[in-house]
Amino acid sequence: MTENLPMRRMNDWFCRTLAAVAIATLLPGDLALAAAANSVSDLKDLCNRGTFGACVNLGIYYDTGQQVEQDSVKASTFYLKACNGKFAPGCHNLAVLYDNGRGVAQDKAKAAEFYGKACDGGHLAACANLAILNSNGEGVAKDKAKAAALFEKACDGQIATSCFNLGSLYMTGDGIAKDMAKSATFYGKACDAGYMQGCANLGVLNDNGEGVPQDKTRAAELYGKACDAGNKEGCFNLAVYYANGKGGAQDKGKAKEFYAKACTLGYQPACK
Image (cartoon, rainbow, N blue to C red; front, side, top):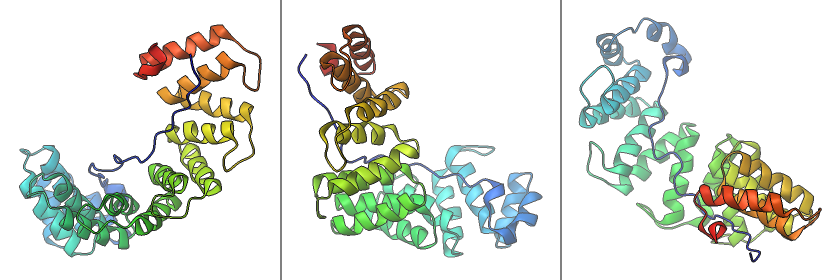
């Protein structure tokens, strides 16, 4: 088995789904009214009276078919009403519909517009999604520097995959100055926030001494953390660690165990 430490790069998945707004998370001025909403008709009444969190919850009901017949077109109207009322979750969820072409014609430019409104309103998942559009040049001109700034804003708000994505931009120097120390910092934040690919990639940096002092024992700890959570690259790299005895005693039995786990998780190089 030859040594090969894989690193996954840009994550293009995060938050392309609805961010459900529970009654308990409505704006403070809406809480008393929202507490009385026990039915769709109650929510409609609240929405019509300007309780925009109720409009968003109605949109979610229609979009997902909860308590009503599924109707993403109708969902879009409730999200739009909330967004027009400057309620950021409504703008975000409407952006999701445009992003995916559900209930409305797919339109990445409109998705970017509404993610932008939601981000400006403090909805950090929208900042993360807008960053992805900027990074890929979807609906807006490709702008990696702007994407990096948006990823950092979302990362500061504990959006783990944005920390990971920013770490990847700094690692590759894709549109921003390459900085392995910053890459390690943001992979560390992603790892601490529970995004295991961040742990696996930080392990590689520790393994190779890139951006951080070389520390193979720390690398193995990070691989183990990722592997325990079902990350296939973490399992594979931990297998390599034990197979080669890097930074510790060689253990062929453990190497075989973790190669098998990585293979089971779908990492084909581990199956050879």
